[in-house]
Image (cartoon, rainbow, N blue to C red; front, side, top):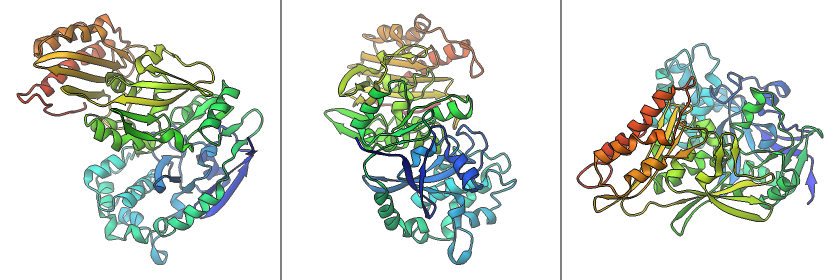
Length: 487
């Protein structure tokens, strides 16, 4: 396998080529310290506040696509082959302010100003996708941006008004799309990239098979997909991650297909990549999915990464376990498939050998009489980690529960099924008494802990109440859900 030692990307309007790019070098540090593009701010250094928001454009099967991301936890090596756009690149016609900036000025959307560039970049991304957004769309776009001054109302008014100041069709990002696409294609040569000092190497495989080979050669390497966890290992815990194998550029790992009654999700697909596919196949996940982190993190974080890190409070495992998902693990050319719940052994330990990685998640489509729900309980509605997450799937035939899968996160050292409650429900008539009895059995499978997010008693009571909530939301004369909601 031939290789090169430098990464190549476009920064605003300039082609950049960098060699010796360390694994733990962040995009934010490069922008601020090396390029003095100080409009991109460091606030939280963990992807929560949005002050570091930039746009990253990459070539996809559908052309050049831009997404707002957090530069503070985005590693520099991962922008190879991308177009990075910072707030300094925004400009209106004839030297005027950009429409997003002018709307923010006129609607008093900035006070202290620290968070303003990041908010402008998030609203810029929204405007380019949805020129006439609703208030709800604006609020979703701003989930990943914290502002302590304005109360958000003037920012929302500015976002809704942007198109009065100009059209996305006149924006440089739109007008230069073909030229940027051609330049990005010219940067790619299909070779493996190995860069950085010997003790802090970044490895970018040429393709999926090369990734499998790289990981087999370096079984103790850190896999960096979206970096929404690994980024914090560096910025908060100062942990070494080298050698790091980056996978965010591998389109083969992002594919999502629907066939033979299964939705198959490549482990490198981001939350945003999956959102529309899941909403069509599993409508009950649409609202739940928008509760995962904020827009920038959903654009970076991957479903496979959320599973592979084994967190007991990960958002995706409980709902996918309830749906009967299985995962494919790969080592070199060898693959094996296991039920998702079997992947989690004990806290901090998963059924994954050195050199093995999660390649795909397969989720069966709903069957006749299947009633599904997903619930996320957290201190904050937006951009918060779950105190308790739940996935519930119950199949009802002729008024009797014929199948049942219930899974919780935040209730044990791993995402886990409520086996005693499931067993109690199967064969019972669809009625409140059956769910009340099943809820009383949750302590047989769960002994939750107390922490700053929630006490053990709160977690147990909440989980029991979610079972009753599921029944009440789905108990109507027509046999269809009244509504599919998230807490």
